[in-house]
Length: 209
Image 1 (tube, rainbow, N blue to C red):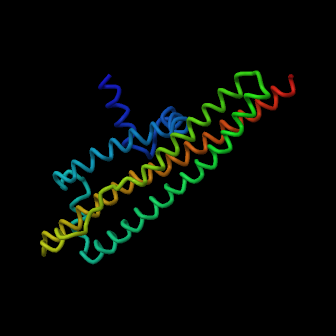
Image 2 (image 1 turned 120 degrees about the vertical axis):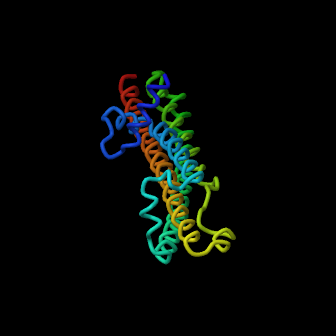
Image 3 (image 1 turned 180 degrees about the vertical axis):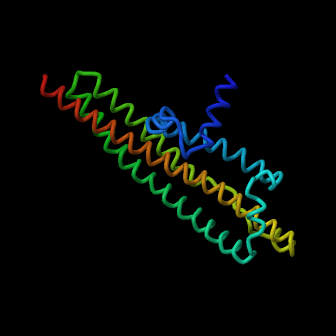
């Protein structure tokens, strides 16, 4: 079982050419992709925190001018805030969707005897709930790197190395934010697709009655 998970993680580490079946799993169960990739990224971040040289591009980052490092850190901080705000807005969409689904479920119970529309509607509600839970994750405070007293206590090469490692860590943590945002969107989209299918089967059931 461990070998299977290891192979899966290795394939997920190469998102440029993912196997088709993994792409299919991501589209149908986007939350699983979020859990797997965020787990991988958190391990990567922990490894970089312990030793920045574990990151293969670290030497290139450490050669960047410190002013440019500061500029890129500010960009990553702004990007983190923008992604969190965008993801949090999904919660509003989910709350509206759940209100509509609550009304729809009452209508189905009253007018339709078939089970297929109800099953699809339940699945739709489950997807909306998962999407909301993922989106609510944006409220959780993720680490922010490259600011605070520690940067004031360093100078020269030490400061440049600190800024370089902080930039790498901010980029990695923002990838987690991006994955979370994408997973919330995809899960919400799948919930709407299931709701449309439920409505379609509901109409067919009405015609047959």
